[in-house]
Length: 316
Image (cartoon, rainbow, N blue to C red):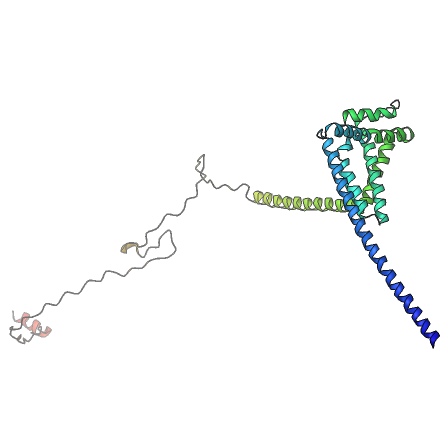
């Protein structure tokens, strides 16, 4: 029993020791990460300050030291020295932030390749290839004139042009620039070409549809003009001849005709207006006086008969 108790106690002691040992390790890791973050931040601030000084030195504002550093940068990188401070700050800050990522270093190498390829391309465009030029002549000309590709571009031109020629050097340099851009941006160059080609195709198709619509509208207008061709709204005759007569609107007929011509049909219309004949008005009745005596009745004498007339003639 005593042995068991001693084992338990020894185990308990060992557990307590392990617990106490893990606590300082975790705290030390935390302090290390905090310190690393502070160091990284300090490095970013210093890099930003140096890049700003380099940038203003390229425009002659950095004093004597700035002018010396600027001439060195122009001698090395040529025309790219104007943007090298920005490129340096972006590359250094990217590597500091992503220092635990191996893929970041691949992108950094692609950025360096892109800078060298651009320097070579500028050197080929600005200055023609000279086989007799020395290596340091590229540096001196770029630092004095602040153009061309500098020592970097001149060295690459001096290496590639004798091997593959000027045209081959252009092809290799442009290919390296495209590959570096694909690695840095992680975007496919072919998809960009596909999108741009699709956009161009859609635009051309839309223009074609609009042109077809305009063409159909023009055809409709031409058909209307052909239908109206030969019709003149001016019906006056310039040269009057007995065979040609102008069209005139019918004259307005009176609404009512006189009584004697009521039964005769009118020439302008196909109906006859019948008017009632003049009926004589009845004479007005004259009232009789009230005190007048009533009229006496008189017998009318009968005419003599034929026999009496004959007898009277015989008697005479």
